[in-house]
Image (cartoon, rainbow, N blue to C red; front, top):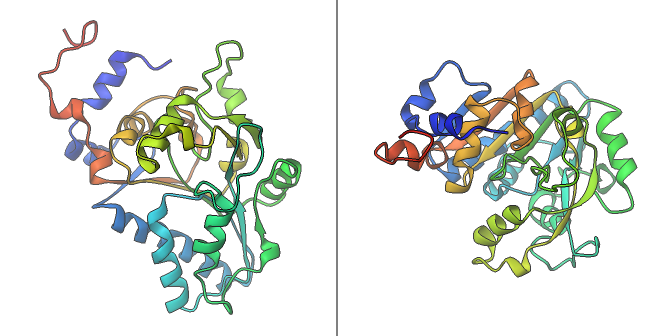
Length: 297
């Protein structure tokens, strides 16, 4: 459990000081805004694909549906630089489900497969595009297949965002009072179907549906941390401001804790967290006069 005093200390550090610290648990890369972050994220994957092409080998990547600022620059780079994706294998890390654990209709904006087909693969010129049989999406009936694909050969890279509780893919902090988990449980977690946490639903409703949580998918399929963090490189990104500010501080300065699943990245040898200037800020650091009982009285 993260102690409030520790959390206060981490959140009290001004953004400019945070960027300069030498004791961060993972490397921090700061960008100006969402547009720059999209360019950086796109370039990270394009360079992995180029490297694999030069070596005439497969590029195997675990990829997200979001953050959404990188799809336009990715397609532009691939098309303008004529980078073939014929050797690319896309392992899609998660998918949204309805309350009965069923895939969403194709027209639902939370249908990740439909979005990726249109905006990730579909925006690439046909002669450069990844063959359909090299695009792998999680479904309720293919969990073992998806696990095997992630583990049979170490992926080159995992890309993803992070959530308000430090979730990557849908590896949320477990809030079930009768089935607590340990760090080892979390580290070895595998692809699964699960309910989404209320804080995740509220965060998504605020970002995408004007606060209408009734339209947010209540369940999901997600690669576990075992699969997500098996890749040679991990690159995570955030451009969504206040919801991610505290989680970033915990990742950079804190300790491993099941309340913030991505703190297990402290054990990975090649991680970069990319955040916008806004995500690096924190209201506690900007209001040092605030007093919290039992913390800084």
